[in-house]
Image 1: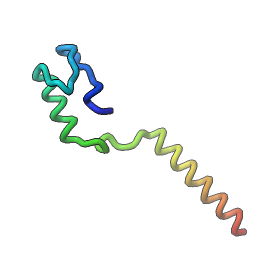
Image 2: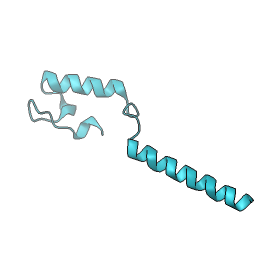
Image 3: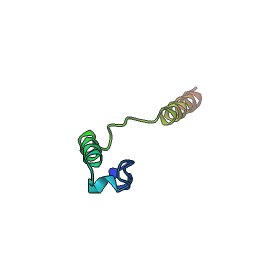
Image 4: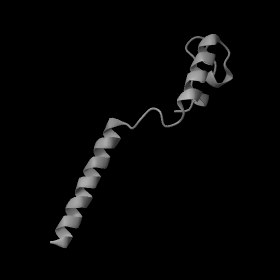
Length: 64
């Protein structure tokens, strides 16, 4: 999620505007972390693993 859509619980303003110290701290933290720092969702990882196993089984079946 990008910080331009987040609303601060402290001042009820958009975090991207940085109205209060909480907004500015969270905005700075989100900018430092970058877009891929959150990692991958565990359910997405499981789905990817299932698809990979199914593809390998399909390839193994066609070669036999």
